[in-house]
Length: 235
Image (tube, rainbow, N blue to C red; front, side):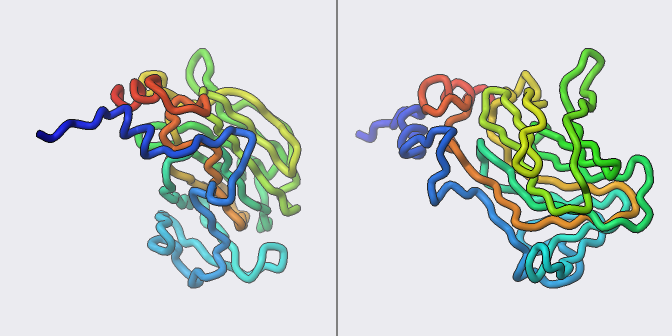
């Protein structure tokens, strides 16, 4: 007679050791992309990226042999990644054509049917983070950056609705994720998206998605237990 294995046990077996949020083991990368092997031209279809604008892999000494350069107004590229809690980190700077009010690039992290975090890097040097508001999500000013200088941007999503945004190694914002409450905003994220607005070209490189907890730690408390099973079954 065959015995069914409890789902909770499968969940625990699949996970393996749980990694605390303060550590980054060597195998923690859910995704890494330096664009060095990409062909110049349309990025869509290369390396799992999808886009609706022309995207160039452009050489620039500050970022290596090739970078991801978005030069279209409203161009968007997205990349699906293995589900994760942790850190999205990327190097970014902008090259102006004629900067105007409203020119910006937006970094978006989320999963199927929801957005967990949206960070706006404005060419007026402001950094804003989308946050829940009384009348719906609203942009909250977080700090400043210089779009002409290479900056490392980090978006930390450790679970439990926690959100931290850093630029150039300086923490600018600490708040909550945007994940829909009925789906559990501490569920892991599964995609990275970048959208540009305006006439400047925005360059990205050295993109890292770092998994800092077990991918089956659905409630982000650095352990896998019956609460994670409950979250899994609810969706």
